[in-house]
Amino acid sequence: MRSVTIVNYGLGNIQAFVNIYKRLNIDAGIASKAGELLEAEKIILPGVGAFDWAMTRLNESGMRDVLDELVVDKKVPVLGICVGMQMMAKRSDEGVLAGLGWIDAEVKKFRRLEGKKVSEEKLMLPHMGWNDVMPCNTDCLFKNLGADARFYFLHSYYFHCNNQNDTIATTDYGIKYTSAANHKNIYGVQFHPEKSHSWGIQLLKNFAEI
Image (cartoon, rainbow, N blue to C red):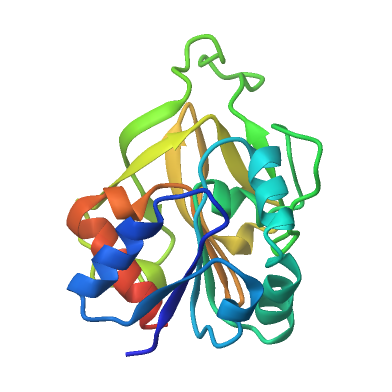
């Protein structure tokens, strides 16, 4: 089984991913500096907290340039999780810093849309807890996941793909939004698979087998 490298820039449930892959008998390691990324065959980019804070921590970690080289130039598969997914967009309503720009997308705050009955005031923010995820297909990340699969969410901003073909799963929370995306070798999920029991474990296994 090919190894998975989890990026440690100070944010995210790093050890939870290592523990899951250990139980799956899949080789996984942690990268806290650029040199530890060079041999990565699969990359997980976790994240929690605010967009600008996460981007600042990543930029200051010394790993940003190597990540760009591996993901953009060498096409190493990468999975962004929660804020790690949002960082893959070009920008976010939550901050002023530019994102990684790996996917043609932007991050928006949940708010009332014209003609909709649900307003921002009526939406409980953050979107926290279990919710359904509706895959556009059951290949790749969602392989071998049953129709009852649910995942754990914790966020107040959502990922909006400018190219609809990059959306591979949606979730309904006042509006239907992209909860999983894929562009070439780049994958992202808004939910936390490491907190989603057997469904999340299966998704992480699927990523390792891409």
